Length: 360
Image (cartoon, rainbow, N blue to C red; front, side, top):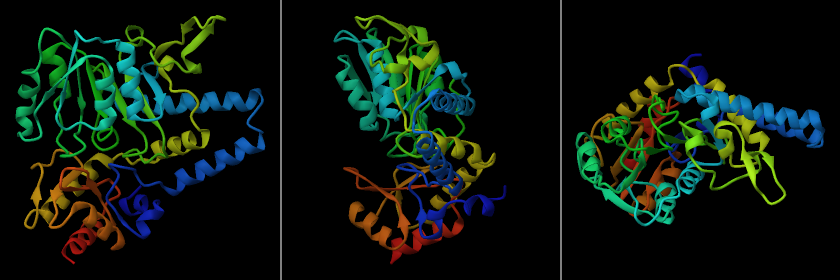
C-alpha cells in the first residue's frame, strides 16, 4: 500500500490537516465499515444465543492477539481495557501499596497515571525531567529511588513535551518493577515490552481505533492481584464471591467492551502499513523544520511524533482559530503550549497548512 493509497482511507483528511492523534486518531473507511457491519450483525442476531456470544469471545481473542503481536508480548499477557487510565488503575489496585511504600514518577505525567498513583496510598516522589535534556532523565529518575521504592511509574513518551523516557534502561538499572503509560507510544514508535512489568495501551490514539478501548500488558499475571474484578476475572465463582482467577492477563479485562468498537479496532490494526513508524518520524521532523525559525520548541530533537511549541497567542484561542482554518492541533492546559501530532498519514501539505494558519 502506497502512502497516497493509505492516506485516502481517512475521510477526515479530505477536510482537515489532522494533527491530533495524541488525543484521538483518525478513523479509516475500513474501520468505519467494520463497525457498521458488526453493529448490523449484532442486531440481526439479537445480541443473544450461543453462536453470537461465541463470536464475541472470538473477536476479543483476535484483538488480544493483534495487540500482543504489536508490542512483542504473548496473548496471555494482554488484558483488554477501556483506556490507559483503566490499565493504570488495574495495576495500582492490584499492587496494594501502603503509606510505607514509595512510587517514583515524573513531573510530566497525565492525570490518567497520576490519579491512580495518588489514591494508591503510597508516597509519590516526583523526578524533574521536563526542564532537562532527555539524556539526563535516567539519572534524574534513579536519584529519586529510596529503599522504600516499590515501583517506577511513568510515560514512555511524555504527552506534553514528546520526550521519550528511558523505560528499559530504568528497569535494568533499578531492578524495580516499572509501570509504563503507553498512551503516546504504541502505534507511534516501535514498542517492545518484554523486559518491562506493566505497559498500558491506548487504542483510540495512534492505533486509530474507536474509543473507548485500551489494553494492558502484564509480564507475570500471577504476581499481580485482581483489585478491580470484572465478570471476565474469574473462571469459577462461589456464592459468596470467592473466585478462581481466569488464566493469564484476561483476569484483568475491564469487562464488556462494545463489539462494534472491537471490530473497528481489529480493522484498524490490520490496516496499518509496515512503513508507518518511519513515515511518522519523518513527518514529525518535517514539522519541526517548518516551525523551527518562528517558534520556540518545548523539547528539541526528533524523539517522538509529538511536536510541542509556544504559539504567539493564547494556546486555547490559537487552537480554536486553527480549527476554523482547517487545522486540528491540541492546546495543552496550563502549559502555554500547542501540540501537533504527526502520524504516518500526515502529508507535507498538512504541515504547510499548519504553518500558513499560524501565520495568518
